Image 1 (cartoon, rainbow, N blue to C red):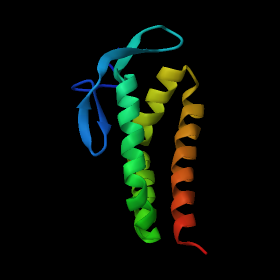
Image 2 (image 1 turned 135 degrees about the vertical axis):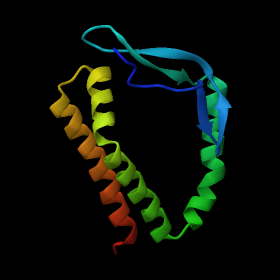
Image 3 (image 1 turned 90 degrees about the horizontal axis):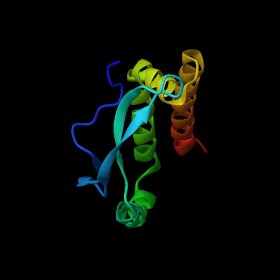
Image 4 (image 1 turned 30 degrees about the vertical axis):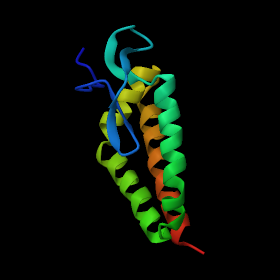
Length: 123
């Protein structure tokens, strides 16, 4: 089976830049046990860096106009929708669930970001 999840390098995106991560972990199909890809592993120092980056970014996010935050959330929903089938196939393979349920889960993700974006600009 061709890997559904592929990374060129095992790196994490923290604080606006790509950083080295721990060794990659294989992702297995829950039913067959086949390797369907690999993902980078975050080490304790990576988690600490991500937490500090989020704390550092919080003031800028609070000052960002609501319409801009809404645009970011809406863009996220649009990207999930654009890659709907790939995301659904990956969820189905990794979680071992029926594809129709994986598609519904992907739809819920789109709905969550869309709803959140509307909440940013609604009174």
